[in-house]
Structures are given as C-alpha cells and as structure tokens.
Image 1 (cartoon, one colour):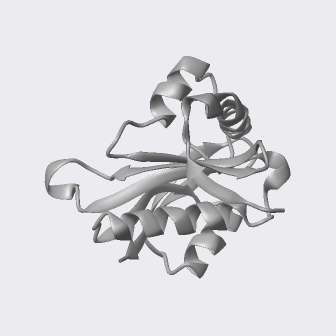
Image 2 (image 1 turned 90 degrees about the horizontal axis):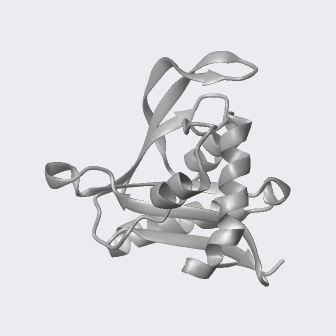
Amino acid sequence: MSLVIREAGADDWPGIWPIIRDVVTEQQTFPYDPAMSEPDARRQWLVPAPARVVVAVAGDRVLGTANMYANRPGPGSHVASGSLMVSRDARGSGVGRALVADLVSWARRAGFAAVQFNAVVETNVHAIRLYESLGFVTLGVAPGAFRHPVEGRVGLRIMWLDL
C-alpha cells in the first residue's frame, strides 16, 4: 500500500465522513456525541487555518484523517493538539502511525513546544501503545470520564509529548 498524507480539500469530505461516522457511532474511542449530524461533524472536524486537516490516502481512497491545532488560545497556544481517525478496514496497517508522525512534524515546524492529547480512552490500547512508542507519556487519567458501551465507565488519559 502506497500511503500519502496530504492536506484535506473540500472534495475529500465524502471520504472523511464515513470514517468519522463509524468511529463516533462505535462509541469506543472518541467522546463525541454518537448522534452527531454530518453538518455538525463537518464543522467540528474541518478546522480553519492556521489549524490543519489532513487525509491519509492510498490511490483515491481516504483511509484516515487528522486535524491539528493549538490546544488552547492565548497563554496555552504554544501547545498543539489534534484528533485522528482511521477507517475500520485500515486499522493496524500503519495509517494511524503515519497520521501521528505527520501531526508531530507539523507541530514542530509550527513552533509548538509540545503536543497534548486531551482525551485518550483508557481502553484504546492500540492508540496508547502507538503514542507511547512515539514518546508520549500519560500525565494523568480522569477516572470514569468516558462511558464505554461494553466496559462501562473508563478513564480518559491526558497524553503529552515534549517537542
């Protein structure tokens, strides 16, 4: 598979939306409302510049997407954050790793001091292992902050990478 990470364009939305819809309705890895409408998802995901939205594509197929931005405005704007999602059939194939590496590279180029993921679901062990393999550490866990459909209330990790 020849994977390319590139800036997302308006014409990528039809490939992005099914990924977001699947991840959100699975209710296992993102604290988004599972009843989120497509227009709401589009507004939330396609963040405007200076933030950035990318897609991971193989040929003309969108396999994953990420958005990235300053974690907070003003005095917190030196820390980056972002979200990433991978299509169900591309999970475990390196798409997530490529998206995280792209996010970290963007954050470095943009002059951020760190990257913070605010809400990594404790049962999302694949993402946690991936982030840790790239140098992220867990700063803390908000216990029971996520209602998992199978596991019940589980923690949300705050994960950090110094740049």
